[in-house]
Length: 146
Image (cartoon, rainbow, N blue to C red; front, side, top):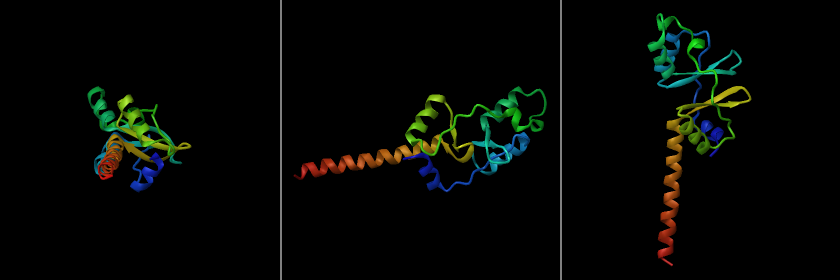
């Protein structure tokens, strides 16, 4: 399945923040929406970074002053690994595993169209494996009854 089809199937709303937002605002968005990461976007919804719970935790252990006063631009990851709607879910899953990341923004042009988490990718893969298992089981049963 293509990432774009999967994201459309989810009908997810994209929660994002701005580079100028405070760490407190970002943490509130993550907590309120029960998500582990979100894209950091410019006013035109173009991707400029990603902010994760890990980024906030790292800031708490390394900040010289109060983390609440830091801005998202000081905490975010700017070199974002992305995928496109035409990429396969399996490919994105492999990328997340190989790069040791848990969230990948789906970007079309420079516009964020969705987010895929490792949980999404693994849930999709599990569905595929269950379907394949069912097909194989049915094939074996049919072969026995010939």
